[in-house]
Length: 338
Image (cartoon, rainbow, N blue to C red; front, top):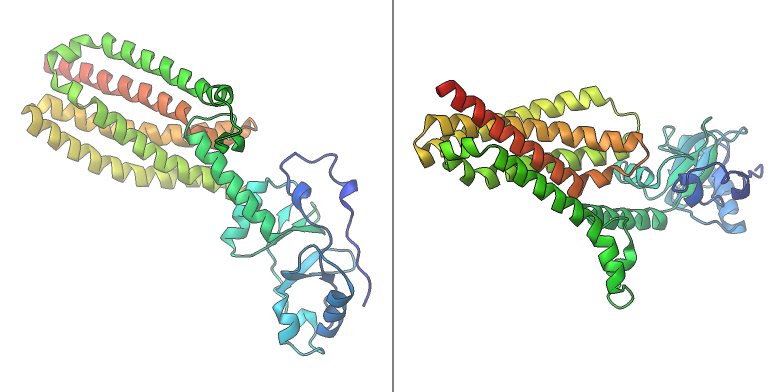
């Protein structure tokens, strides 16, 4: 069997993004030609030391990835079995430029332990091994958790109860809390600006927490799903995805709006309150969805981590928008009933 060599790491790392698949892949992997037999593969495995052997990769003489099969097949099939008869001819792979999170999520989506890395011409360069994938998933989940808690930039050392100093905790946790502080001040100014509507119907004040919460909850649902989707699907059809999400959220908004309108009427025995609360919930849920889609997309296009959108910044933005919508609708309804 012909000896197959893959490119060395030293020739390809200079031009790659820091979190690209090319930086985390292993290049000492078992790769064979399609006309090789299982006996040839056994000899290859016994005579070489590889970084990962979950799968045997099949390439042609120009190193194009054309197939893959699990290593267990090597010992289940007879030594005369030809590789081309066993391999999966539609292998899953990622680009050498792919983000590490995309690599890990792709492996999960297709339920594979390791994932091959190819260049722009689909030539095999290496493999991201299973232990690396697990490490990526662990780091990304912790990073997203820290983002959602408003700890930025994410730093795993903050979990070190002995090593992380008070100064480090303050430095990591204060910035977004300051953003929340200013957001709260803006929210208070908005409420004071609509004093007339509040004086006209004090029951409106009682619904502020509920309306803010329900819009945040709906926005968070959209955000979490969308952030994970764009991390996994690089060629996502955004218009199609957004249209589908709009349909789903619109149905949810109708149910929630009707429920809040009924609650508003029973609470204040006022049709005005019912219309204001019900309409506001419908509108804030829809707007929360728009923010949840637009913010991560804008961050991604500017090469920021979209997961930032799940943190306090998005919450503050939604809360201020929700209050503006709520009291603007109240002012309009009271003007119509005047």
